[in-house]
Length: 109
Length: 115
Image 1 (spheres, chains in turn red, green):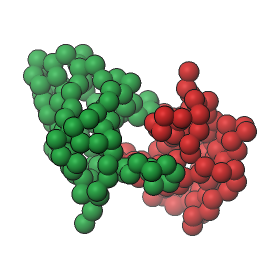
Image 2: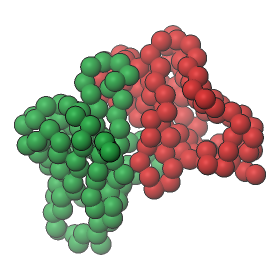
Image 3: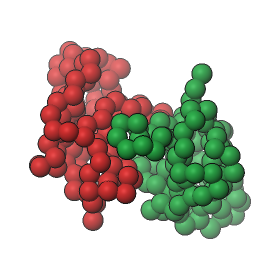
């Protein structure tokens, strides 16, 4: 079966760095997406990786290792507004998105 | 402004009633999707459509129906056959080209509560 694993919840301090991991087992691979979702709102797109390596976008970076079925989202200089759930999703061989359950990130002052 | 709209934001329904959730997009996207989100679970695909007048069942289509008469619109009907309809419903759309342009963009969601 297809599976995406992420930690359920993480806590970090304002101004610090946090890494949210995602491991996946899917039927084929056509890219990995990270989304941010604030409570009660819709997910918003953060990043896309299809090749191995690190993609940097401001305070957020996303890394992919296809051979290990592994990705992480790195958030630097954490702000209170970064408190949200972070969703990892993999596009499979049928171009369907398989979603993880999300990681709830709590930022403390 | 380009985007995806869903209405209503909150919806209450009595058991045994059908209800239709609206989804409209002006992004000129070919594909549209309906997801259901429950606490502690990932998004689950209900239905998707890649072209007008055609749609495919997702993982949890039972108790739901859709139509795609226009490129911009993809309404979802939650029927009385859906045993546990209380959830947050999300509509999304995307291009179909392979790669980053397949990024799905979401509407604000409709929270359905069955009383």
